[in-house]
Image (cartoon, rainbow, N blue to C red; front, side, top):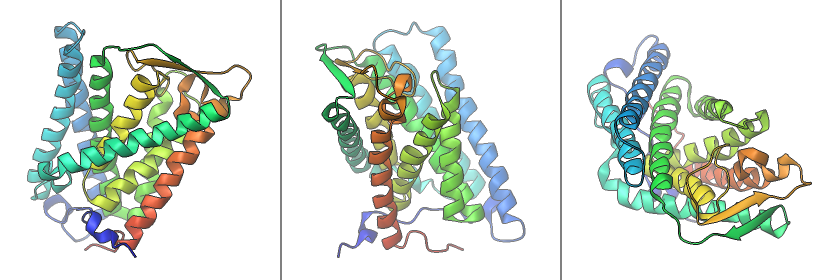
Length: 296
């Protein structure tokens, strides 16, 4: 039987300084989580907002603006963890980035392609090829969503809720929060939020738990969005993801539960099946690897 322990390392929860063992560590962990969450959100999205106002958004500037926000989130997180938890942020160690990002990118692309294959097979979507198109905006948005959202919801929320209450509460809370945050998107519904929470929140957290690094989750998240918006030209979480090389539209007469409606395919039953299926398998792999063993 495959030894899944070799697929990564346990998640480093932190046990020094603000997270040192002792009375009320759960409360310190929750407070630390809230502080980190808003610090990273303010700094990363704030830097994007400033650059949006200063630099005309066209072509490569989309990557400059969103890439800067992504870089700010990684650097700030690493610095805060270094000083607040007295440890290196191993979960974003650069040595693990190339392999993790590549594995995640391939996985995310295959996963979303499987969703659309189901859609096309059952006649739920129409597909039209447009031809070559600029990818600057799509790449920029991929950096923003893939990096910043993973730092905030997995490296901060999932990890520190895990520190406070254990893995299962952490998975439930971080997934629910991830879904709820998408309710502010255009065309969002409660079913869309549930789909995001289950198919993405659990699945992306499972990759983090298995590998102990954030890079696979970043790669999967980014590739899923890029494939959805640029390769297939479908709506991404209720928004347009820049110019795509194709256009995929839901056929009239089918329930939004089957197609995702105006929110996009990730709010559909096929998306829920694929994402949840992968998430359950990866969670099982993490469990087999002993990743959920109690840490001091």
